[in-house]
Structure formats: structure tokens, C-alpha cells
Length: 107
Image (cartoon, rainbow, N blue to C red; front, side, top):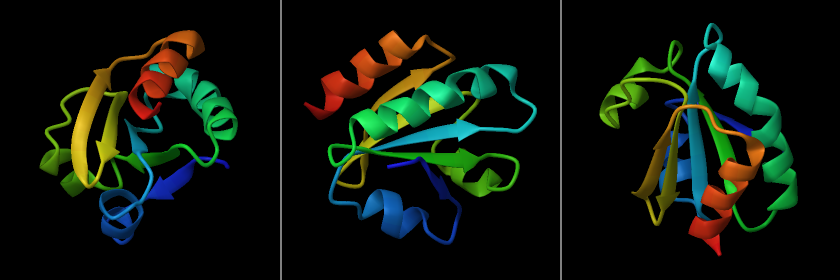
């Protein structure tokens, strides 16, 4: 499954009410590190299809969602389970580290 684009219209249904864990990538078009991790997140999304959903929130287009969760720097990855933030990772990381973090939280 490819990553899912999230905005204020589908955040509630696709993240907070999701049956599976959801990793939300808070990013922006101008953010170099955000662009650096995007391909890794796409690959992880395909590898863990059915176990986790990976969603992307553009903070420039959805500042209210970023503010609601206190996002101060990007990229910020938040793992939601049962509508609650279960874990968070700030900053870019190599695919191996992202896979280990996501995999360790959804296993």
C-alpha cells in the first residue's frame, strides 16, 4: 500500500479511527530531510502492508493538525494506536532505523 495523504477532512477517520496502527509523517514541500525519508516510507509502507498504515500530513496545508499535536520541527513521525499517540520520532533517519522503529511498534 502506498502512503496516504491526510488532511483535516480525513484525519479523524483515517488516523484516529483506524483499526491498524498509523504512522503519520508531518512534512512540508520545502523540507529537505522530509524529502530524503519519503522514498523509505513508501518502501516500508509496501513491506508492512496490512500491519501499519503510513500517512502524510503537509503542515503548510494543515497547520491546525500540526498545532494540535505540538509539531515543532519536521520531519516528525507519530505512531497512532487506537486514536492515541503511542510513540514519536523527530528528524530524518535511514530506512533501516525507520523500519526498526515502525516494526518494533507494530509487531
